[in-house]
Image (cartoon, rainbow, N blue to C red; front, top):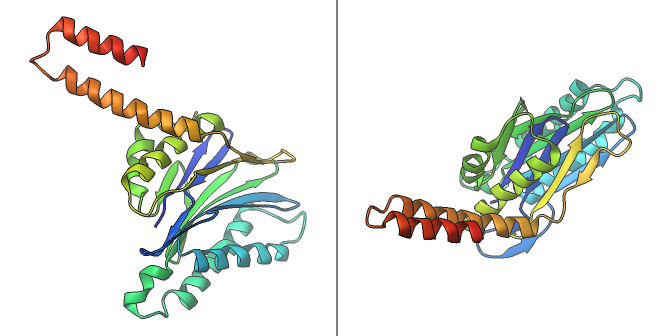
Length: 246
């Protein structure tokens, strides 16, 4: 149970996830966003679902990247390796389990790939499928909340910092409303190719998350007052002034 979000923007891809792992009985906290920097490319994974099976898939991908010859690397070759690994792991460790145990073993990935001289690309996995994403996607139990927050504000001209704040807003909403989503948010950006250090940690967003939730509460109260025919114009102006001050 989690939320993972990936957004394609003008200068790269932003990935984010919560850090709570739970089996319905106990809780633990850990990373769900992982990055790898190789000679010819850099990439990052955001994991939703089974920690054990998902991490197994990520680690096997990282091992198999050594099969690509330096100087002969393309986004399609990197994506092809991930696609084959995801398919094999699902077939071996998910599909072979009894039907009632499969949900606990399922995992999904959001993958950002950056290569020199090209724009960063975003891919997603669902069961054994692996596919390109042109705009954004959300995965995990908090996915619907994430889409509800991201969709009205998303456009391809966003930059990494703007997208980071949008992801933080969606993560905060999911942590507030969805069981099994929690902990600190972990958000990173994979910048477009040509940079020596394309992976950027987008920290210091925890305070922004809290501010976002407070704003949503106050905006909801203002909307309630706006629709209240029992409030005079003068009273509503006072409500509006209070909202502006806060």
